[in-house]
Length: 103
Image (cartoon, rainbow, N blue to C red):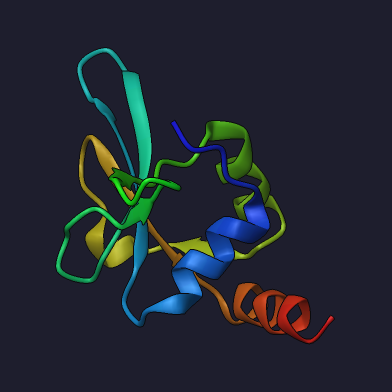
């Protein structure tokens, strides 16, 4: 699995309009969770390794908690359901991306 930093996640979210993070788990046990980046269409955001092979971009729980804590993403309550939450980029998160690009 490709290891991303919180700044990498923000860059991926900002790169294409409508991208979001999906945090999904088994609603019966509240376990077996995974966090992934998705396109507006719902498909996985994919990266490419040095050999050109595609892989889905997953986010670790600690990175996700950091993004929520520093208000870089917000929970999209209009899409709230049992077993998953969607998170979208905030204006604050977008400005962090812009600052990183100009540094």
